[in-house]
Amino acid sequence: MHTFRFTQVNVFSADPLGGNPLAVVHAAEGLTEAQMAALARWTNLSETTFLLPPTDPDADYRVRIFTGSGELPFAGHPTLGSCHAWLGAGGRPRKPGIVVQQCGAGLVRVLCNGPRLEFAAPPLIRTGALEPEVLAKIAKALALQPSDIVRHQWVDNGPGWCAVMLRTARQVLSLKPHWESLDPLKLGVVGPHDADQDAAFEVRAFIGGGGFEDPVTGSLNASLAQWLIGAELAKSAYVAAQGTALQRAGRVHLRRDAEGVWVGGDVVDVIRGEVTL
Picture 1 (cartoon, rainbow, N blue to C red):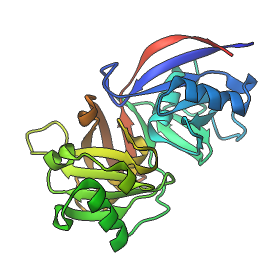
Picture 2: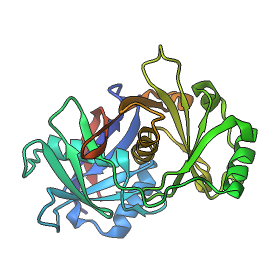
Picture 3: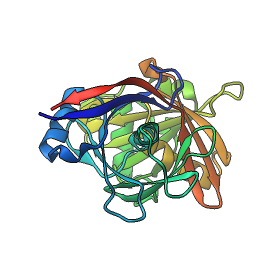
């Protein structure tokens, strides 16, 4: 058996119990892929990550990201949480103010010189309006009338996200999905808040195949921002709330500049220790 440094962090909220938890195993090169997958099942979190030496000379570290059912090439809250844990363990980026993470999707830049970590949104690999049969499937699964959906779009940056916009955040919060009808879609639902709220939009992420709602989702918010800002449905900088329906208080900070869309959020340590495998 071997002992590894272990950190469990909270991402997208300064409240230690208000965002999306992530387990991080440091210096994990002694673990097999089977052990990584087994630990991810055991932690029972949406993702568990493993920090490794980079194989790309331009990267500061490499990360492998596991859910309870398999490995992901990229995910948003594991990117911010892993970077926070790597920096907290003494990691020093090659270039001041920017960390380069190597993952299955390639190299991802993470800014670390502002009030919070921000990762560069990956490019969309599928865009365009949803097909009529997909819209009908979503409306049925969410018990919506077709007129309730005011905008819709494929916003796939890897995981397969599609998205619909409703008229209000209250509508978004009232949804009770029929999971079997939603399968196999990965669906983001967004609706605008009233102007007096601290967030511009309420977001929910439904994973139809697993019957699961993700508390706060970096990859989805990244692609939503590319869609909403690009279509002038959102300002060039805004805050999205997510997790409210799950009694969380996630806040995702989105902004676009000349380089693209950046996705930021607070990260705090909750558990530090060791794992023996």
